[in-house]
Image (cartoon, rainbow, N blue to C red; front, side, top):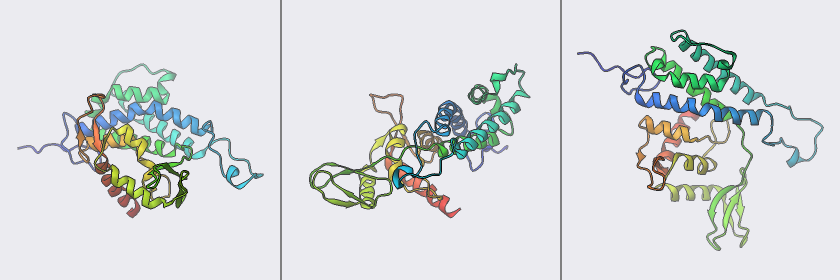
Length: 272
């Protein structure tokens, strides 16, 4: 009796479904490809400094050193994403007769082409490598998209109910309403504890949680995107709950499940 084939994607032990990828990895690859246009837009803004993220000048006074007009990290991420998409699109094109034009080589068009041929890719023995490399390039791109530093919500004041907000690196918060002081870490833990049993959409969670999560192994702010949460659900790492009737197309996820898995992956990242 023949054994059930296993998904060709690295670190996936789910059975493959009518090809070399399991349904979860194929759906995740599709989601990664659909996210490429939005990612490219954010990378372009970050590269050109249109997001107005400055260096240390505003905090430490004027300096004679002018910042670079472009950001090298995001440029490299865009280049790597483009190269990865070209590689796999061209690999597919050698199997499928197509008409190649200059516009075909644009990153968004490459992603659209691969996505439109996902079933053809799934029949390729290298489909697992494609899913892994494209997924990595997309995640790396999101990691390099800088966002302005914002105050982090730390819950309501225990004494006067005023909302508390902390600067990203602050250790203490002083309430604007009654001058009570709080330790930021204690408030962070309290908020996470209060949120554990709540059900949120992937988008809501990706906006609410990153500021409460520990930085990665290199000290960079935590990254938690909606695509990551959906990918974990597709892989069976967290449970997907039925959507709220008001938003029937958006599944819900338990905050505690996402926090526990994020903590597990964070510890693995620090140990590697």
